[in-house]
Length: 375
Image 1 (cartoon, rainbow, N blue to C red):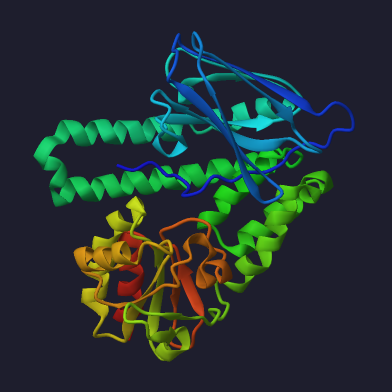
Image 2: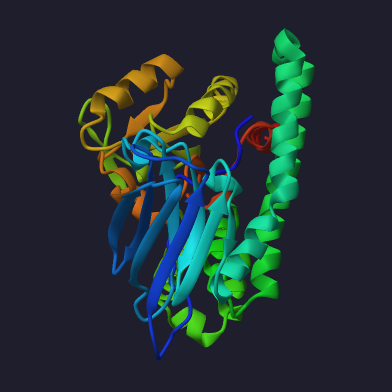
């Protein structure tokens, strides 16, 4: 079973300091030496900044300027020093003035972080998910122990129920943290996560509840810029029009499907959870394609990945219309719909109104059954 994960790291600044803004990260990962490396990555002013250091007797140090406000960052561990993309594990921290100690005997994900205020709040935030993480680990263990029986319909059905419960718990934890910590910049990270599966009507009040300094931060302003996009694709809104090229290069407009129920499905060939969900989407399409229902797939593949996109369509048997401008997260439709994580979908009615979103697994089949059973 796959744990819930964001497909991109969200970076948000934190407190505003008027005095010393220097930070020092003092780390320890066992007793490892060259070539083992730890990488530091964060965003500032819209730019991704990376640094690395080779371990010596397990120790590493990063120093820098936190800027006008602490910044959400991530430490990545790679024993072979072959880069961040090949890192074995990671741990989130906040760059803020002072000394941030990161200590672990094995993996960074197990590290203890001791630092100033924002890092302490981040510790609370991460600890809140322990029950969810344990739940997913238990599912993995149960699946492994089940062997071939894990492929049975009964086992899969029960696993989907448990996975949905854990997903709802994950969502609730994010919401509760925001409500309990409106003055914390970690709440911006929680809000970004919560927004993935929530509607504008739930998201906007949470953002408005944040304190003025949090909303005035770089991360707060970035989320404020996202809000109008989320409002435009709220339940009951008319789905924004877009037109992109299909696999043959023909430009297809969303409005050309007016009169049908349409599932706008954002995905990508590189997205593991998307590919895992595709069999369910195929099943839904085959069952309802003759009942005034269709799907428009919108891929977030990269400019150099057209072959991979086409191969995935063929391998997964996606027989419906597929479009993409191959611009990754900067794709026009993805930006217009405020897509920050995939898989993500929007179900629109024959008049173009959004009537449901983020329908996965049995939720998609149940919604379509509900719609077409009353016609």
